Amino acid sequence: MLYPAPPTIEERSGSEFIPAHPMPLRRDPNLLQIVIGARRSLIEGWTESYYRSGIDSFRILRRQIVFVNSPELIRYVVVTRHGNFERKSPQMRRALEALLGDGLFISDGETWKRRRPLVADIVHKRRLPEFGQTMEDAALAVAEEWGALPARSEVELTEEMGRLTATIISRAVFGKNIPRDAAQRVIDGFSAYQRQTDAFNLGYFLGADDGWPAFGGKRRRRAMAMVHDVIESVVNAHLAGEGDAGSMVDLLIRRNQKSGGEPLDLAALRNEAATIFMAGHETTATTLAWAWYLLANAPWVARHVHEEIETACGTRAPTLADLPRLRWCRAVIQETLRLYPPVPLLPRQALEADRIGPVDVEKSALVMIAPWLLHRSVDLWEKPNHFLPERFLSGTRIDPFAYIPFAVGPRICPGMNFGLDEATLCLAILAQRFEVRPREGYKVEPVCRLTLRPKGGLPARIVARSSRPPL
Image (tube, rainbow, N blue to C red; front, side):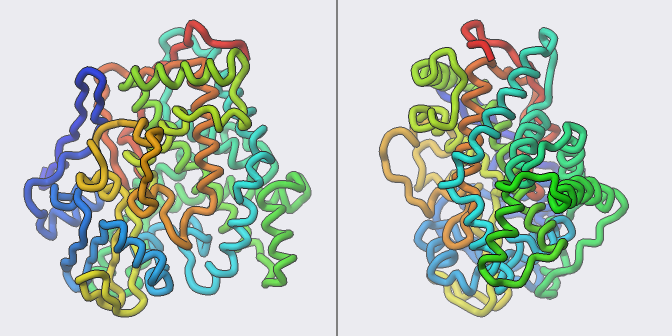
């Protein structure tokens, strides 16, 4: 191999667990290594020096790259100078525009300003009780499926969690349960889309400020069609009156009408529905898959989780109302998001020249904020590579600009509270009844092309707990 991937580190010792992560490089990679590494995984090409707060500037061909990795400078970029740095990078826009169109995640300017309040309102935390029953029902349905599995049978966790979260977000967004085969097409389509997407975009580094279009090939177009066909079918079903009046799409239409803005045409509606669907499905599914991996390798944490659920819920299944008492469950999800942020890189593009701390920033420079690096910075976190959910239980204040799994500032994910509660509740409902045991000897390797996933998935056995309650 021209440029082998760095080895993956994973260590266990007594009651300590350092979960899988790529070993930092010993020396800065050259241009060829940067290109090859970025196309393979966006989290592998960092030396030890980047796992520390600070700022750095360098060039790749004709483009300035500015890495911002300190809380105070991140605040400057995303809050103080939000207007200059609100635009996502050409790499991210080009990689996702075929899938999401002008959806909120990659839009900017007037489109973003007009749609952000609409989307934020329909996923606001005050609406969570309306979706709690949907979360509970979907997780209990998975529990029933797991309970019927033959002894010692194996599942793939990212797919299992993908179907779970696809069911929840479909019901919440469209007011309509998505068939199992349709959920699987979305999962397979997005997985294939990531594999076929170039996250590097050579054109941008050669001087094209908007990068080159990501044309892809037959496989990429087929993957995109798999996702679009499912989403368009449920959007059309909703418009035909088959969805619920309280669904997110229905609320989006009604909020837009009340705002007096331009009506959302079918393409805009599909793009926003696709954005909410993909964001709500993919990020929570991968978070849950990583959480199972972490719990399986830290039985001392799993004991706290099981004891807490028993104390809070007894023999009945956890509900949304129980979440304030499920502090260990929430802390496990928060620590999972620290170690494995679903979107580990948050690239922005400078609209105009600027100055970030000591660095002069050129117009159209790539300004990179990396939760992957920030969350593992040795001067910001104690034992940054260890799995320690108790750090979120200690009462110690965590700088909101040092912990940004949902981004931060005006572009913080509007569905943050929905995702946190969904992941916590699903984990509690399933952990009450089951233990998840990854395949013995299986090498877990985190990789990122668009989102942070375990390479090849996470095969595992589902084992019923002896003290499980009835459904």
